[in-house]
Amino acid sequence: MNDDSPARDQRYGDDPSVIRRARTKLDVRLLKALAAAERVILYVVSAGLLAIAGGIVIMLFATVVRGSAEWTEKVVVVIEDLLLVLIVLEIFATVLTHLEGGRLRLEPFIIVGIIAVVRHIMSVVVRLTVSMTAAESREQFTEMAVYAGVAFLLTSALALARWSQSRVQGRP
Image (cartoon, rainbow, N blue to C red; front, side):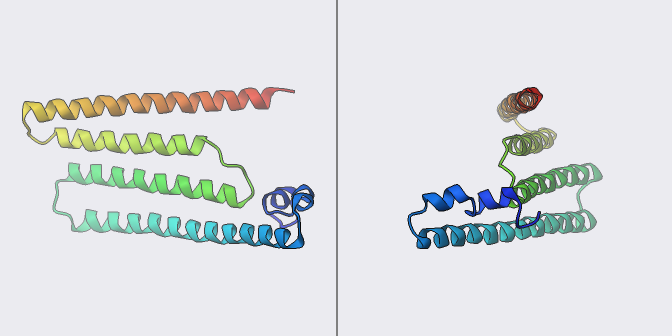
């Protein structure tokens, strides 16, 4: 996005109404400096998120190659780690949208929540394959039921958010 765009002007304190409301030239300079600092921090966060995602993928391959677990356990670990990478990349995409001057939206956060709940459900399923007492099994099934309910609620929230967004965009 080019630096002269209206989205950038409004977001980074170059909007004439912001400048008019500023009491002094010092206020204007401070607003611009704070906006620039925010932008630098967002770039650092973006780079950090990409580094974390890359590190997870590298550790995933190292774990699969060196691991002595059965192939079924390795498959579950691969899927869980790939879902973790998806979470990190979804947050990365949200930060990029913000850097481009876009507004923060609710949808990416709901998607991250859904992915996280699915990861936890998978962990419970893996734990259920291990022999345990009846009380421990009941606790694991209760935990899975709660996670399933949360997944349902988050999916409903995502559907509602998308439906309401389409209604807003459909208005003349």
